[in-house]
Image (cartoon, rainbow, N blue to C red; front, side, top):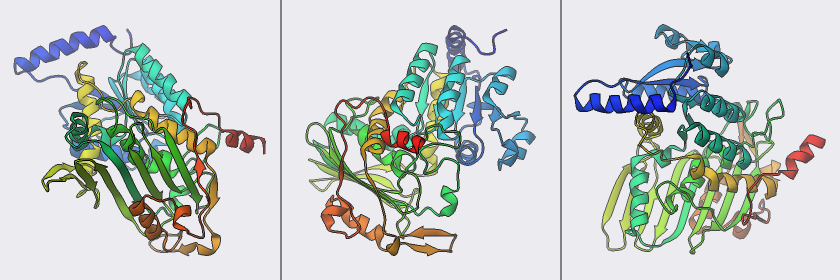
Length: 437
């Protein structure tokens, strides 16, 4: 007997579920498994417990090579959820309709391909893959298998951003002029005490390309591209980009980035993000249009998306960054698994512009160290190293949409011009140098 239902079986059962719903009969739960239950996977399990309808899904397996270390391992066992060390081990024993992949970046590709081969739909946490070539291979495999693939950029799934994008597409806000984002998240030594965070490759030599722009604050670059997409399922690639990249942590990549560029049609964008700042400041967005200015600021639970129109009127789209909205990607993928006709808000195609920018930055961007003389080591609330004044200087850059070199900061380097036209595959000469060193 096959381990999974065929696509035809799924469609047949969906028709039966819909008929049952119309008759007032309870539908079957989506059979769901999760790969990676430590770290972010544990966070996802918490989101499911608090914000997903327990009648919509059944957790049938949890996969992690070190599951005994996972915070919820005992709780999962008590709930009767089988634990497995490898995804192949799970599929040898059972099947699922939806696999949530919350494992480290370098595992995403193979776990996606394994899931597709067994007929499972997938929600894969971002980034889908380190490089463009792998993302396209994953996308092609999902299409060939006839399954759905969602990528966990939660802002694309949440209703306020979806409504905002519809208004942009309708012309309500007018022509987009400038989209800006700012984040200063302090990251301590413990954050980079990892086999892959801040690294070009993992311990086994597999590409990771983890940096503040490719992973930790990737949502804001992706959202910039996403809201300007030509339809609800697409994103737009910038046509020009300059970048200043800095490393205050002594990692292999960079922990501070300033990006400025433009899209076809004249819309500019600016992003300032840092892990070496001396202040913790949650994301601040300012999207300027001909007819309105859209803003979001405050902590995750209060960061409402608000459009203030030139005539003084206001439209509040609601909060978009709190945990309930993060969980929307899970709720949405459960619903899309149950209903073959329901589209997925963020797909492999949707993330390609953001991944193109990230790959090109790593390949062509110069990284400068933040001056050792300006860095200050702290011990509270835990050990870490930061640059006093950096959060405020980055904020000044954000307000004026200028790069640090244009502000005249004595620690700044000249920007790298990042080629995007015709950039379709990652080559990474820098990574090759690392290998040959």
